[in-house]
Length: 161
Image (cartoon, rainbow, N blue to C red; front, side, top):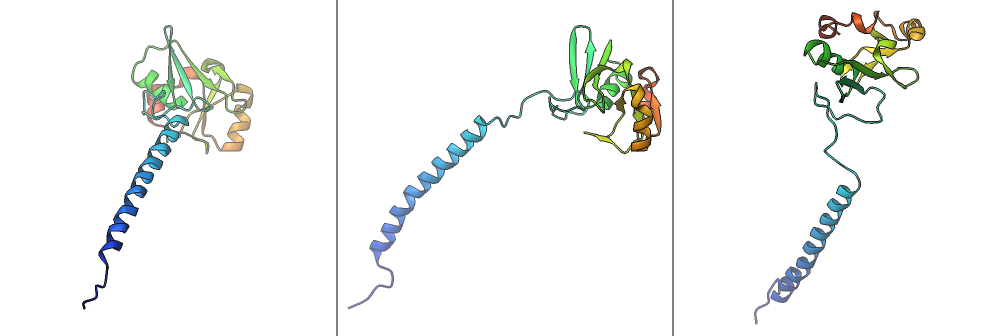
């Protein structure tokens, strides 16, 4: 009489037991993917026209160029100023968030500090501050220059550190 090391019924039973678990795994993975999609994980949304970065609507770094009746969003003052000053976008105004208060203001009302230790989403940026806070910002954040909007040219934007 010969003995088998691995009886055939055990092999068949293992294959039957494995099949339902693959089905359960696939179902769980599908449900997880649907839950993630429904939770608001979106790839869409506004993107910066200069660098392509997604724009966080809650960010105090975001900026908006007004071109006629259209509002074009950017992820930072620097990107908006590159579009306006270097790429010739015919904007009539720029809306930015003031550094200390975070409120949206027309850029003509503010000053921009370059060369500070405060970085925007894309690195070195021109930080918008209220005129009365410019000296404090310079002292606190080792800024190099304070500029008005009219003083920011294509050359200034292109040569930011």
